[in-house]
Image (cartoon, rainbow, N blue to C red; front, side, top):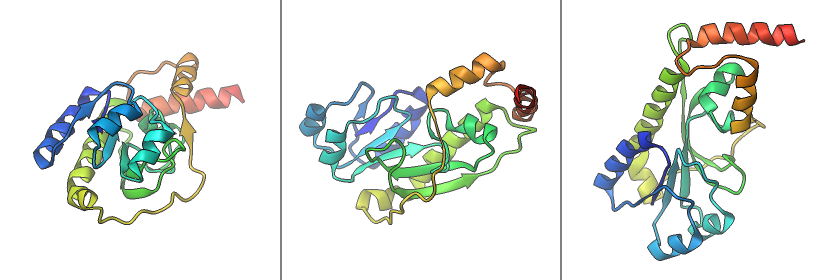
Length: 195
């Protein structure tokens, strides 16, 4: 079962359907639906709903999330934006879904690097989505067979909500097409002026 709310995930879903029997779901997932379908695994990618504990328990570890951050950094919403603002590592992670948001054990991850003079938040977002799709494709046979090692997340990391971006937008003009280096200069100047 593949759960998503974002059309940029459809290409990866189409690829998955060529590898195995896959069903896509975009509404809030309920335990009765999971019990009816009895999926071998659930993959969440750009899914806006928090998956309930009863579903996590029912799947018994075979439930994974594709997250566009280098966990434990930038759990939650808009990870690519906060990785630049907070100057934290950037990357992508495939992790097991646990009861804590983006806190599950890591199956695979890849660190990514960006030239902020040449990138916008939009281009960085698209690059991270291409990287997470490529990572899943590369590791799919291992994931499907259950032949992976999982590692606990180390360190406290960071977490942001959708509301954090709303608060940021109240303080400074934000646009997905803005050059990242230019935005960071304005943001850091604003931060110094507020101190």
